[in-house]
Length: 202
Image 1 (spheres, rainbow, N blue to C red):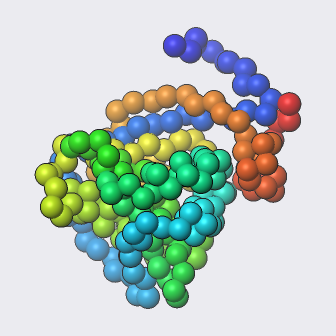
Image 2: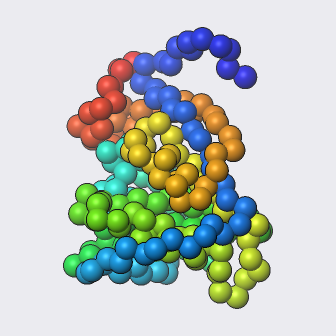
């Protein structure tokens, strides 16, 4: 338990407040904005280099680094698991958005990763993608229905992320503080990304 008041974060580290959200039943259907020239494709057994490229183009600005730091074999074990689904938002033949659903826990689906590159942000693409995420999570073909669909976001993510998840039907249920190595200090990400978060060198 963290004490009330300020707690020092060591140089070279980052701290984020993480909010976990969940839904226990499908929300009412929302109007679909439709997206001309954009499709959602499931990528079965994605190539690790392809996945990391898309993950990095989406998440570098928000200091996503966990999947870049993993050993390739460990990442492949997750992405190639039959109960993990990777979907790509495709535009002009290139992946420009990521939807990753993790069904490995019985009766539960985690919205493990959800994001868009700058090429697809705006014009309702996020809502379009979330509509498909919710539909897929609650009606996975050939499997019993889930009891819980959950996601987490943190204060390093895009400022609108938390309110977007709440509007989509998720309810906040838990808050945590995460402290971890700054990926720009460790060399996982370039020092130039996420200038909104200052680097404190050890």
